[in-house]
Structures are given as structure tokens and as C-alpha cells.
Image 1 (cartoon, rainbow, N blue to C red):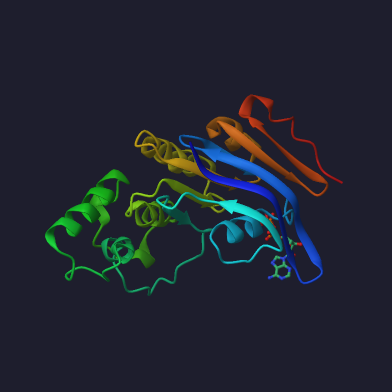
Image 2 (spheres, protein in one colour):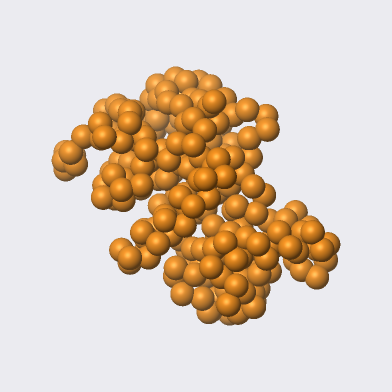
Length: 221
Ligand SMILES: Nc1ncnc2c1ncn2[C@@H]1O[C@H](COP(=O)(O)OP(=O)(O)OP(=O)(O)O)[C@@H](O)[C@H]1O
């Protein structure tokens, strides 16, 4: 079953056409890698999928019961950021932060913190966490609502290589709960390692297919 299907999508900023006649589908259980060079329109696509940008034309079809979790590009959080990791994850409960959560909601937050290996540091301010810990906190926050689709927007860009693999390994653990993933990247090694399907965005068109059909990486003109 499709969790997102896109047909003939066109997105522009004023006169600057960024996405032209793009069609693709993400099905249940896919780890869809969206790959392409800088400036090709990957983030623009994500913004359109999240409803933050109105397409010029085309269809974005997301079934009514599909929730989307979103892990943004890594942003450095100020050391003085006051919320603890647990409070930061709780922000996505729709109820504000602990202690106003009920017992069930609190148990849910704790479970998510456990599943992202953050239990030992859950009371530490997020601002003092390492890059990888911050990413896991974003992941826990995004997964708190049990989304059917998780969009990771270059979330690994500022992590070192080992941490990138760790974070995505963790994401694949959640896939066993029928989570579909859309991973936006320009890292070809990560794409091949974790992807089951790919959408390649190029200045002159798009390719979609199973990951074993992802072409060799060539520098684009
Ligand atoms: N708000 C905006 N107004 C005008 N042009 C924009 C805006 N945001 C992005 N663009 C342009 O749209 C094009 C696509 O940008 P986008 O950020 O979607 O690319 P990307 O593939 O995500 O790039 P990167 O890999 O560098 O993050 C670029 O030429 C960019 O300069």
C-alpha cells in the first residue's frame, strides 16, 4: 500500500522552477532514498510533502490515516537550550512537557527514549548532548506519535561516519513496526547500504527504482 504517491508534481519559487513533472510512490515498508546533488530540489520536495509549500500543479496523495514524522537537517542547538532530552522528546506529545503528561503518555515517552538509547542521559539538557545524541533525540521526538512515514532530511550530514551508520541502523529497527522511511541525502554509500528503493533527482530529470538499480555515482555537470 502507498503511504505517499506523487504525480506530475511541479514546484517553483516565483519564476524559478525547481521540480518539474515528478512522479513517484513510497510504499509501506520502503526505505526510500532521495538522492541528488546540492540544489537539485530535495528539501523543496520535502517542504511540499509536509504541506509547507504549495505546488504549482500535480498531486500529492497521502492517505488520511498516514502520520508523518520529520527529522530535520541537523541544527546546532545552543548549549544553553534549557529543556532536558526527555522534555524535548515530550514536546511532540501534543501536551507540552512533563509533568503535565498523564501516566500513559509519560510511559510512551520513556519507551521511546529507551528505544533510542537515551535513557541514561534523559535528564541532561539537550544543549549539552553530543551530535549523535541530539540526532537520536530528534528521532525519538519524531517517532513519538507512531508515524507511518518518517522523513529524514540529511539528518546525518554533520555526523561522523560511524554515527551516521548508528543512527540509520536504529531507524531500520523501527521499520520492523511497519515504518516507511524517506531518507534525503547526497551520500551514495549510505544510500546503497540502507535503501530498498531510490529516487534520484537530477537537474534534467528523475529516476526511480529498486536500490540495486541505482546508477554509479558520476559527478554532474
Ligand atoms: N525560498 C526560496 N526562494 C527561492 N529559491 C529557493 C528557495 N529555497 C530554495 N531555493 C532554490 O531552489 C533550488 C533547490 O533548493 P533545495 O534546497 O530544495 O535543494 P536541495 O537539493 O535540498 O539542496 P541541498 O542538497 O544543498 O540541501 C536551489 O536553486 C535553491 O537556491
